[in-house]
Image (cartoon, rainbow, N blue to C red):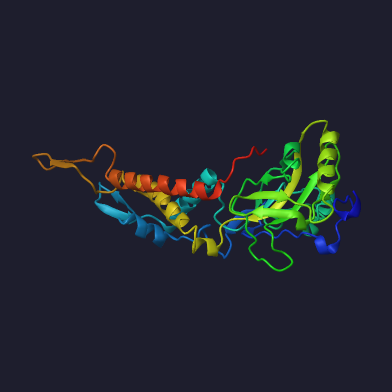
Length: 331
């Protein structure tokens, strides 16, 4: 199309996107493996085993009744419980807990990487651990969102979207948006100046910075070429999403507590079957050869787990309120 707004030619150097993974990856194996998250931390929130121990409030250790000995739960296991809790929060809310470069989708063909402006991936395509952290799926083009007041509204799957290193020339969380016509292999890019973002809700709209008739024309062309009012997988988007240090020190401070109480439920559920606490009855045979220990039906930490569960559910509701926003069908 004219005026350089949608072009099938390679983008100019000033508009090239170089996706750099924000996590620390080990690329020496056949499959990339995450070594640490942004800032070199083993967890996405930066929470450590000592934080979990303080929240749980009881010794996190296994007990061996036969020998009467205790063994401290390994630090690696405590980190795993925290990571399990972080994954659960992300899955329930769509809220990413650390800055993440999301590729939707990662372009594996060199010609596609070049056409969409991925300078660092033009020879071998995008590589996980180098060009992106998290692989997403493409987004459908829906004609209704390009009509009237729609402004091609697109709710992104992950939130909040954040630009982790904003500058005067690069201040959007969405770094690249390209479309592909059905049955063709040519990509075209949307000018970054057109992005209008609701960062907490993860909503992207396109508002033409110039030549306002271009966007409706483009929308109609997509609809005509697809012979329908939707085009599956038409939008390929790259963006950064995830809570930053500023978020954790301000309005999203409660997220760390949500992760810790969830991890606390995992920890207490694991150790309560082995630890000699919360006994309801102890009996010893007359000859002293056998001791019987009876715990409450739900386990010695049932009350503490129940309290953590209620707190987790309340904090989860708060998180959903802050990031869900209006509901749009997204494919």
